[in-house]
Image (cartoon, rainbow over all chains, first blue to last red; front, side, top):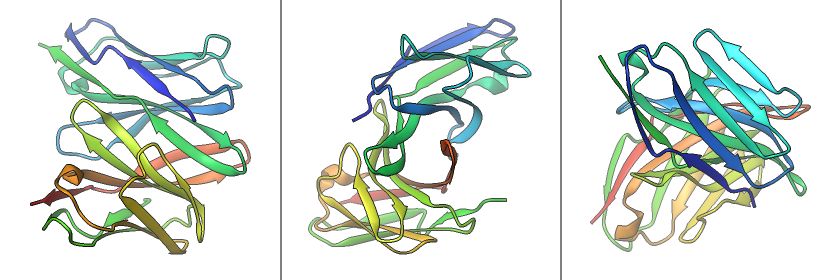
Length: 115
Length: 115
């Protein structure tokens, strides 16, 4: 089955700096790579996703890059703000065998943005 | 708005009890998932279902079973609750489009304590 590794587990940056979180996956059949943000006491919510036919995607201060050959993808947050402080999860999903839609998460990165 | 609703926010059960966690989604999603969230371990997939009566084991299915008799409802069953099943349980659902997975929407979570 799929295995997703996420690094670092904690990340502390100064407000205005950039933050980068990296993930690797094991199954070349994975074709969908979302990133979720979970604020304290709340449910995870999608912030950006990318499919395997795309190498990069941007949404304002957030960008995701995908390297299919190396099986890794990264989240980039620029001009970080205190409200970016949260736990971020990467995930990999796709078709496995005869079933559809498995979604495996990394262990999460706790991002702290210091004012 | 997609709504994924879990039947209980907090639950306290005794060791050996049979426990039912219910999840309902209102968007006609094919995929439904049960995850367990523990500090430092991220979101671990217990089971997922891609259609009525269809289920696939995730990474940690031992001690759990699931039921999906209707498309909108996915139940997680702890056959005989044990203290090591004390955790936060998150249900999610997603639509399947031609290329595979799409955004997974999460419920608010059930904090289960087994005493």
